[in-house]
Image (cartoon, rainbow, N blue to C red; front, side, top):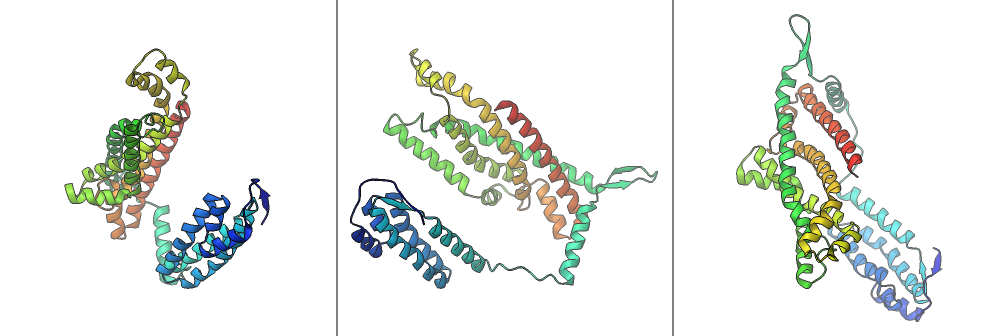
Length: 348
């Protein structure tokens, strides 16, 4: 570990080491290294509790290495130097990777003849989907499976489009309340900012499948439940992106408009909106792209669209028919990826 000089003020190294021996990180706080000290004070006990909670006490004992490093590092910090934390961070990462393999019971499966046969069948079906068929006259035409899957695929695209549209109707106005540079001039505005950002965080942190299941319980199985789930989750995702776009604007035009005596609404309308419209459009297209993929998964739990058809065919082990839906989804996503990338490149 390489220590480098970062500050001139020094403290008693022995006292710092003793404090960190009693409470990990306390010696760092005494030495003025608040961030590292608080990380150790909170992180070590939490990590030990996590290991103990999944009955991995042997890994918890390995944290003694971090504890010993914490004592030595506190003495180094007290002398006005900062040692590299690369080794303890690496130890924590390795321990958590080891814990994850134990908790998830991860192992490389031994593939027997039955498993290899199933994988071969699925792979062959995906490579040769039931997409085309020959008529009595010998002409190639779309198969019945492809015709059946076309409508749910179109439904998925529109489901994602409507979910995106509804989410941006709420996300756009809320994003202005979630922009720090617009909401930091008074305690009331600061409170609104905190509430708005908190709402965005909650809506983004809950998986869209959870919203889909709630919507299905409320309105029943079908595309409407999927639209509601995508819209609610999208408010949090788009709101955060829009707010960050507003926070990154140039303040020169805003000050120029304010100097003319314009009120806050006019400042936002003429100083903020023109700067963020291109990014808003780009983020909206990107979200629609994401929602098409999400809508496929939502369909598997009853949210409508091609996901329901795909799930049904997989349950019946109709892999060639399922492959048609898979290739349709992949094709639509690739086209939307390309189109949205071109549009974003033109706008930003």
